[in-house]
Length: 327
Ligand SMILES: [Zn+2]
Ligand SMILES: [Zn+2]
Image 1 (tube, rainbow, N blue to C red):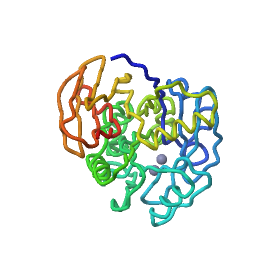
Image 2 (cartoon, rainbow, N blue to C red):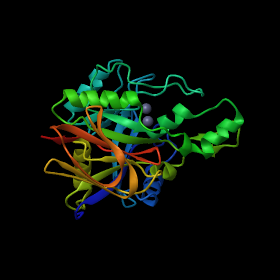
Image 3 (tube, protein in one colour):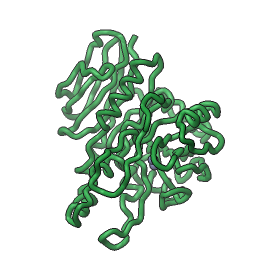
Image 4 (cartoon, rainbow, N blue to C red):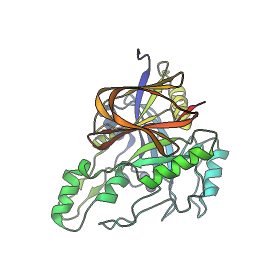
């Protein structure tokens, strides 16, 4: 099967100096460019101050992370005006929609028991349904597994940071699958880097942990288009946001392996092509209907429904697709 698609790589969930990040838009867009990204979405905590446009060759879009103090962070995209946090997330979910935007529950299942002092920030009431879910947040994943109990474990957690990444939480995937089962629409998912490039000085000399560029080489959202991306910023922004709204993005940890799989569905058959064999799983509403090693898969859909794909490289979580509706 010939691949006539165009692929655009992007990173979502980035903090700048306008909240608790350390970079400005010029530095961040340069880092994105050198990490091979085409677009980024900046989501400062409770701020919409950052500039947007095509900057250093990268399409920079601004959203915001609506961030109450202790829970229910919400990555809001396509909004026009600032939306304040509230104790009731339903209020800001509705306000985002009223402004014509949409949003993703951010890091909804951070781990309760961590071996460090960073308090988990979760989605407090799963009966409150967001428009979409950030199923994988790189920085939360790292913080869930960062061991601060002694200096050796601290150093290990920084130097071998990619080794402690575990992938999306089972509870998050279950919540997302359940929402998709109940809804006639696709409930979309994103992968977030949650990049801050924090400057810290704990035990060691002040260092920038996880510079933007290294974050941008991890969780990437790949948008697949049948036509080339338009040139002008407003049109690019529309294409990117509309793609994310309907789940036209693959979530790939490029640190595991920097490769875009070919995925297509035709006549109730899912085609997946990879350059090397990997563990492919196909999931229908939380139930695994295919689980095997392959590099060239043709999977006939047994019944209608929403199907999504997970791919593991050498047992490491690697690729997560959005659900594909098959009638
Ligand atoms: Zn957050
Ligand atoms: Zn954040």
